[in-house]
Image 1: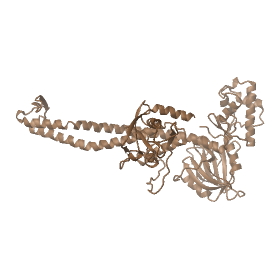
Image 2 (image 1 turned 45 degrees about the horizontal axis):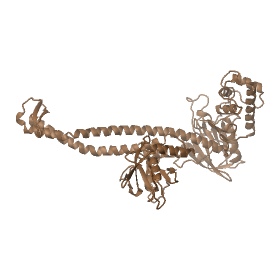
Image 3 (image 1 turned 60 degrees about the horizontal axis):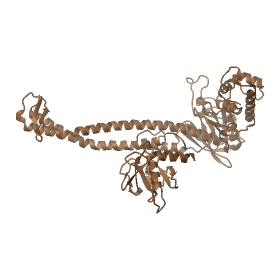
Image 4 (image 1 turned 90 degrees about the vertical axis):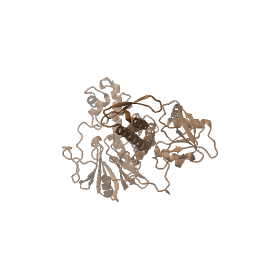
Length: 588
């Protein structure tokens, strides 16, 4: 993930100062343990200033509104209390090349600041601190004691001290080309790496951008550069410093990140602001990181649960197999009782003639018991095995129902193995919320779940949607909650409901106009889609059932997405055809 360097921070703060100051602070919401959002209002706009001390994505910029969830963080409560009625009036750098800024809050733009919010963007040492006008620390995102750092402690009540001064050579616009070249090429090495080592305030991403803008490979060695190469690189170096001096920035997407200089943009035509560029980039990167973590966590959890349930089901099946021998024990007891006269004390086995077949049967006996006592033991064994079947059957049904539910969840997780859009993370979070509500995992946000009121209208989730070649819409549930909403809220009397037969998968709707009949081509495509969004997506052909939504029911007490149906018809879906069709649609 590309970090915010001094060039990017200068570009952000320049745009914020020109377009967002002064701005009244109306709200303070902490999005997560690393990010706080300030609701700002100017004369002509409103927005959310995102301030993050994330170790990999520390930043400050105008971003999207935070999600509506309870804010239980004490840091944001402190900020909310102190910033009430104040405005953000100034944004100052603590030092020219330091990635630390001072956000000043006052009653009016012409009055001295009452509170200072220091934002230090320094990788894993990033921090946000609130001080009063006397530079006394009131609260901090991270407090640092003497055991953690002997250089700079940060604690409530202490006096704020700026970060240690930068050690190393800083870039200068008036530095001659010969001195500049000599410093970078003193020790041979990779060009971008030696530029970062030679000068402070230069990030790896910026060094690579400067090299590419000069037509050079960032990985080529410094001793391979010609005189013309050094001249071109020095021109880009001077151009960069001039942009910093004039606050002349141009946001653009780069090959592996972004640029605020616009020289090495990967796709021309970005017309947004620097704030939008940063918000888009870090939102995507953090969403992708969160998606990977949550997907792995849920996948491992479901695998562990299904493994235990399969073992439990196998144990129950074994006990049922044993109980099938109950009648045999009763027959043996009857035989022994019929031939009591053949028993002799101390016998460990006895051979008797079967009633029906007349063939000899050998019975094992307990030599310490007489014939009647051995027969009674067999009768007791017979009764116990009969009771076992009666007790195990409902337990097995419960285990198989739970296993079927978790296999549905597993199928939903397998349908979205990687992050491509915001809806992917939203669908994954819905799966996590569903498992929280079903008490399979703990709630990371410590929310109190409440049942929705019957009269309250609920918004339909973002189903996966596509179209058949003829233009008929197909809706697909991405998890169990979406499956339930699709089947019982979104479906109408004209649609067709599809699902793989006896195979975990998504609920699918073929959306039809009133009075319209589904063509064979549309129905076939919907079956292919249902087969693709199922656990059998690697198969060549998959049985798919379809029926009217009115024939789909949810059993009383069933888990989300668990349904039964009737009046169904069966056809064969071909998931590989659906895959090829969806990939082609995505390319277009």
